[in-house]
Image (cartoon, rainbow, N blue to C red; front, side, top):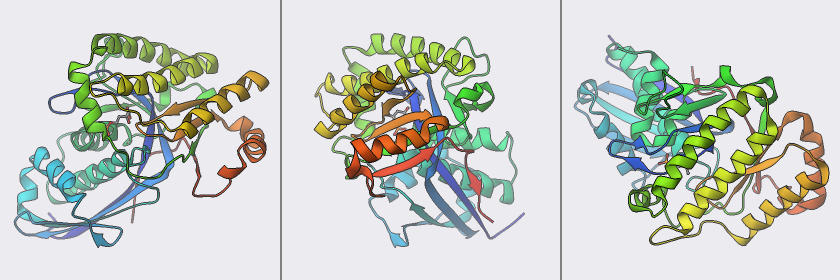
Length: 339
Ligand code: PMV
């Protein structure tokens, strides 16, 4: 068994179509969620370990980052892994996209960390479960949505009666349940604001405990996920569009109608929503939006219309041509081990 070593993983963000919003103790979701795993928004995390007594140092983009450290420490503490007590860790992490801007940076960050910890365990002890399932379970402890990033293509997280192997503890790979019409989904993220959001997802989840629409939301998410599973299997873009946009707007409606209510959308987000809907109406193209917990707008469509989308964007939204205003992402194959 190794006494020193290095493990390094690059893990992507994901975009939920049916959203996880609200949780119970231990990061157990209030409802099941289903997401596409992305490929361009990546966290790269490296852990250098050596025999020691549980000391952890954390660097973000080469610098100590005290404001991120408590989340890392909390995740490691909550994992409660005996073998970690015998090692000192140096964790070095970097993102290639803005953090805290509604691009689910916690999903890529926590999945990368969970993959590294699980890989380290594989080197210094042994694993009692399949590697990716264990990494997903651990990523969930760091940030719920992170458990879905561990699997390429798509992932489902949360117990559903109709999916026997589904569980609240970890995500399931969902790629093999996608019709070929969904094999090359593009996600163009229009960056309305790259600043830190003023209300965290944790605060939003918490509000769901006593939200006036809590029961209704659970029923809605349950129906939407069952319909989404069907649409993804059948290659039905029309139903997909209906569900994706309903979920995005419902998520933000829940934020607005909480106590206290809050708004993460900006006037520019609304302008983009109207532009996408108008485009669909005018052309009949299978294009829609979804939104995470932030003001940025994710535009989803199949690769077959990418050239047309490029022309449309160039003509209608010329101020998004700069690289800092748009991330052209797409569904990807999941995390990659470095070295
Ligand atoms: O994983 P968290 O606790 O950051 O929650 C994220 C929730 C949403 O991104 C808004 C939806 C989702 O399912 O990813």
